[in-house]
Length: 439
Image (cartoon, rainbow, N blue to C red):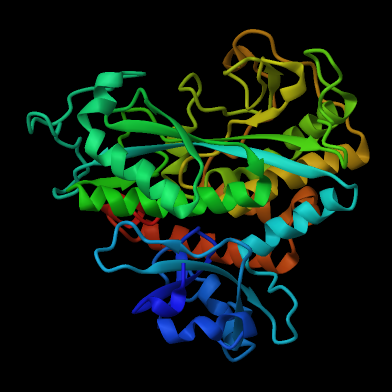
């Protein structure tokens, strides 16, 4: 894609909530991008859900709201299938004046975590399973979309129904075409248990690419849904009495010779795998803010509702937070099942992979794997009970401080505390409008 041939293109970085922040620039800016000549205030990535500056942010009130330099990532520019006029998205990251990474940039946080794997000659291979819900948002509350075949609103979930997907075939045809054009490796589509709820799985690949794919995919789904007369949301709980949207992460680790370090030739996996599991379990309660970043997120975390609520693991067990799937031994991997669909993909992968590396470095051993229903086990460490508790835990936990830069921790905590205060001042019946297409 030749950016110079476009009328305009979009230069976008990822903020704390996973929203795209940046600029629309003319095609003539194509030559400026590699030089860092395109700039953005550091505070642009440190805003709340509504794009408002964080009160007390040192990026605004101590630095004079200084600019940083934008540099393209190694992700190639991609088209914007939901726009009528041809354009492109150029993913960028924010750097300091001396060219070093800006620590408040979520993508840089993941690069920082992956550097620990790089030093061992390891590569993390990851994939996501992403759930979203199609809705009609024209009323005072979200309602199920109309079945395109007859114009009648959907009246229930259709788990694994091919007919349900066929009803929205035009949307899914555009979705697969758009994903291919954007370099997003979308694989299987399934109809899930919720009303108008679907899941797309992604092909496994390098972890940073997996995060990029998830971030871009969320914008693609939302944009194409609007083209088809609907809205799409990754809200953790679009309807209080229906299934919530999750985002599962699968990952394995390859050594310098391409061998899976989790594979010992049997179903149980290696010591390294168990150490990684132990790290994930240890950091899980304090990572609740990453996995469940809004009050609505905690409506999804209900015992027995297919969303993990405690730090437990097991083999081929879907009631636990950390599942070791079955299948060929050479593909031994960890499935982290805690996050909602409303997460920031870069922060999610950072939290999961950073915790796994701590467990590997410190050679921790996990508790015994759960056999049977994990919801029936009473003495497991629990995720945070609510948004405020999660924010407080994240602010002070020693494992979190080993994973994330102090600047990012401080920025995220201030952001969430400001959002908590804003939501408390809003009628509860309007909260969904703030979240619907922002998360």
